[in-house]
Amino acid sequence: MPDNSKRLILLSIGVVGVTLSIGLVVYAMLIPPTIREPMQVASAGSSSLKAKDTKKPSAIIFDSLTSKRLQGPLEDPPQETLASVREVAKKPPPLPRFSAKLIGTLFDSDPSHRAAWIEIDGKNRMYQLGDEIRHSGLMYKLSAITDGVATFEVDERTIELKADNTSPLSQSRTP
Image 1 (cartoon, rainbow, N blue to C red):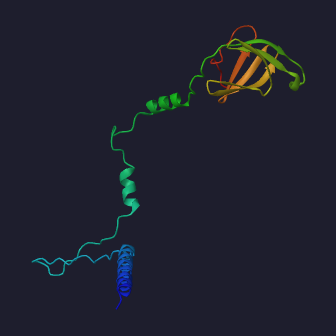
Image 2 (cartoon, rainbow, N blue to C red; image 1 turned 30 degrees about the vertical axis):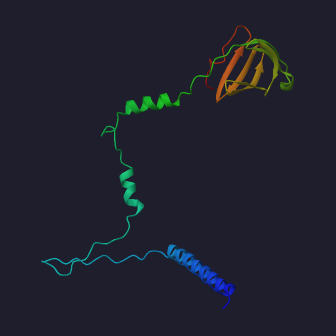
Image 3 (cartoon, helix red, strand yellow; image 1 turned 135 degrees about the horizontal axis):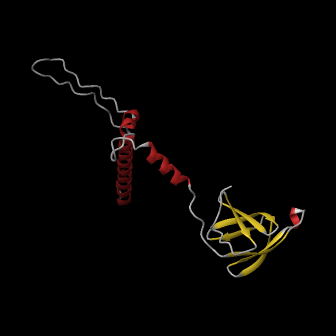
């Protein structure tokens, strides 16, 4: 038998061997493990003892444990304390301060012709209804212009800027 034939036979045997090994490893990884039944335990007093039920615990069992407080007082706080905490939580945080002065307004019966000249941080500009001023990450929307008063809305709050003096936009009233 020539050397090339021997090499070809040995090569083919090697390839088949490697392929079978890889197939065996993949097959072993894909087969789910078998679950064995619980062992029977024999004792001196009783010959027919069986292991307890081996069902997996459900999530319902753990819900009752996780809903309980692990730390903190054992009794509920008084209602007055809860009411004061809720009152503080309802108050919106104060708006950031910046200097704004209403220089004048153009008031007309037609709302589309109304305008307000406002000086913000030293810069004068004319604003019309619906215009927005971005400052400190907030949007101040000009919602109304009356004679000598410009009204802004920001974060569900209403702010009035009057022409008679410099009004900081952080002083607000809730609607």
